[in-house]
Image (cartoon, rainbow, N blue to C red; front, side, top):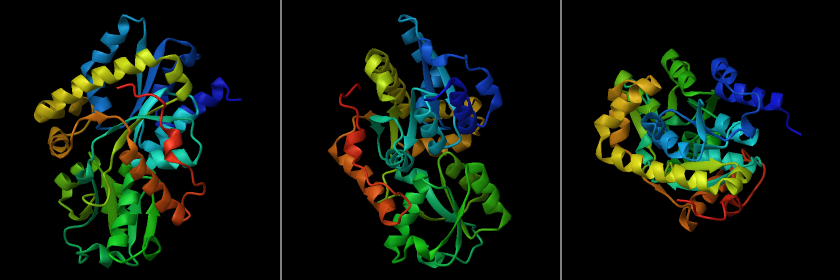
Length: 320
């Protein structure tokens, strides 16, 4: 049985921010509060910045609390520990969560964002192609969307994951530090960190996700919470649809809105914003097949131990 102290411990591990955890009420799950986990730069960030969800739920006497996570694996762990009710994660972290038995269901997906992930080397590096990564050290994280990109890119180049030396880190800041130290030959990142790296050091992008990985983001939630509060989730998606439409036609304003919230340079956010599509859609059979393909790829590499059916993790109703 998960205790309140267990929940607080899981949230502390996932967020790495004691100040945020200290602000949690002792019995958050018992309140009429929608607890949302998010990562830097996504549609939920825009919704958070607008304040519109809080206004929409006020009529139902619901509050909203937001918690930032360093990456998808930490966020899905918090979902599993009942520290949050709703959140988003990229395709690969979602698949790893599926295989690990995380108590979360898919509610919706976002459009493909292949240019938002990349494998790169320093501009002065002699490495020009993915094929030349054989035997090289590459900075990445376990269960990240860019890990799947690397697997696919190596296959495309006639190599396997076993042909490279993975240097595992836990967050994007560690990737950047490891790359800049010169202790690795290449690195992998996702937006906005990829865009930030491009602007700060102009690395050579060996491969992005085009043709290899759709790099979708998924909206996930605790199934019991959704069962009890479908009206709240419907309102969330209705407000998300409005902010997505605004963001799609206002890239500069989106960057300026997010910059102070995320502590990211507006130039970085503008680059990242211009190459993505802000639209949330239902999880259909094609998207399920994409996710299953990712799961099978990691199962084949023995990096995922349990083969599960992604379809079983999709919520039974469309709430968009």
